[in-house]
Image (cartoon, rainbow, N blue to C red; front, top):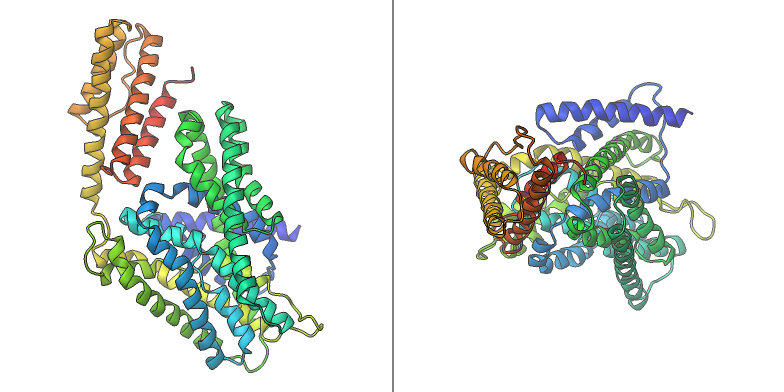
Length: 517
């Protein structure tokens, strides 16, 4: 009962913090972490212990799935080379650099230092998505940072398992075994994710009930995760692959009513899970500090040194890759490199990995340095979330990388105009066929003409009820044409993924306002 009360308190606290974050126009994750820290230092505050299995099974699947669904597959194709380099090369380099630095700065043995390096080697998709959601980054930059955080899981998991094996059993793991684990995690996870996406797509094509669609959408990430983990593959990779594939075809699998309902449901789920998990990160640190053994009082400076090393190494990797992200190519850009570096934060996944480190070695003795590894991991996570999270918008603004509001507004206005013209052309075609009552055609034409004259005002004209049913059917038909035109503009790279999503949401709202057939 105490745990339930704590959870409800975290939800109430998160709601208040999120309200303040929107009013102050700052990202919510850093404030949630700080709020958790503040609560943990209150006398009498309960000590919170979260099992890593709870984070892995309950929290991560829907958050990763929602993030993967937002990933633009079109933009991902343009940056797959730098994403591959970051998801493999940078993870290995980060693990090695952190391990070597920790051996020098801390009393940790080399095996446990490498465990810490593997834990902190990859960026966190939950934190990256939550922080980047409100930034006006160019499509390629946003996709690069987000895709890197989603796909570097397999590399970091293999490194972590190898490091834990060495630390616990004091044995050696060959490169062949490590490579086999890597391909099993990535290949197996991808295969399971693709299979789950295919089965779900078939089911959703034959389902029109909003409640069933909602249940299917909520169960899909958990199904992918559990099936992949049961096959000893990467559950996180399976969830990401399923989310990317299903996100690409969501318009073909459901109508506007269902898409709007799923959007609302997932917005609530993501808000609750993100709020609780970021608060837990703040709550964990004080209790971990109290459990540190003697002789580890320099942990704040050590954590700061590790965080600085990760940032410096990331800058050095991002600088040459920034040329591949620029739409026109050219030289590497310090501005792009700084933004992509600062957007790569650590979060809940490193914390879950650190909590899963065994308590003892194979001979039954306590694993040396485990409390310090947990403390340094949590401290680095808190540092990146708070410092990088609160300053990310400033870094983006100073870099000149962010899209100007005028640019986005012009792109959206032009796209709306093209959608309206597509609808008018279709009306002309129907008029020549004389298959639709003239009153319905005239009403639809007035609606579209009004949008051309006043693009900002595109709500339905509710006056006049003559041939209402014919008008609604015609209106739906025009919306289908406009959706096809919107897809064409996106596929031909005339509009960004952000504009496509916003306009598709508007078309869905418009179709939903017509009522169900």
